[in-house]
Amino acid sequence: MEKKNYSCKIEVPVLASDAFDGINSISGWWAQNLEGNSTALNDVFTVHFGETFGTFRVTEMIPGAKVVWFCEHSYLDLLKDKTEWEGSSVVWQINPIKNGCSIKMTHLGLVPGKECYKDCEQGWNFYIKESLLKFLTERRGEPGVGIRARINVGDRVYQGTLYSKSDGIRHFEGDYIVLDVRTTDVERVTAVYSVLKHEKAGFTPTQLKGARYMMVENKPLCDGVDPFEDLLTLV
Image 1 (spheres, rainbow, N blue to C red):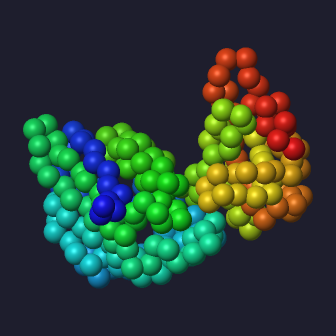
Image 2 (image 1 turned 60 degrees about the horizontal axis):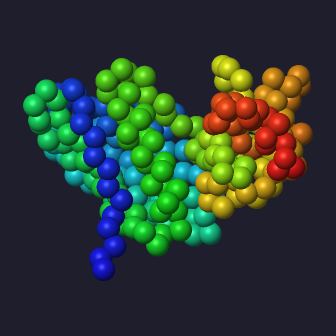
Image 3 (image 1 turned 60 degrees about the vertical axis):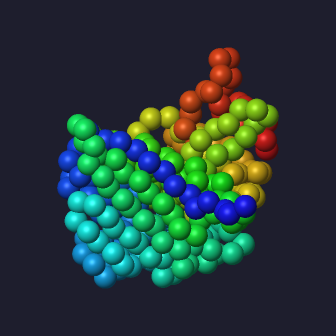
């Protein structure tokens, strides 16, 4: 059976030309840390998520209809094969529909069986179905700095963002929990050294044992569960 490339499709109530411009405004919905340009044919840009990065060249561009990004270099910090994305292409196709347009993204080369497939699938689903959608309709995307990750406590799943210690401490509004990460399985944290409250006075990444830390959204996923106390059971 032929392995299918990752693909995702959304419909948005905006003109195809506006969707095209939004997709190419990468720092507005995908990666806050962007180097280079992505708005013309043969432009080269690099997205950074902590130590993870990918460098892409714009190899095809039809304004309002299609754009293709070819991955020339990649360093996927959490994978055994850190260059797994190299040689793959991200293809965007835009088609007008009633009251807006449809956007289809296909990542050629990202197929089941690849080490990062499941985690990259979840990541792309978030960035396209949530962040890009919000960016195009509300102008408030959720571009990443670190890598979106998760951790399980029994059948409970906590979402958050994974950072390299070298990224420094991230400051967020609201209530977060910091996990000092011991081990990971791609984008799933599997063991931690400690669990800390984000508001702990004087906290800096240099205090951590691990090379990475995870900021967990302090939102209980089921009634009666305190996320901090729940995560402490993993230590």
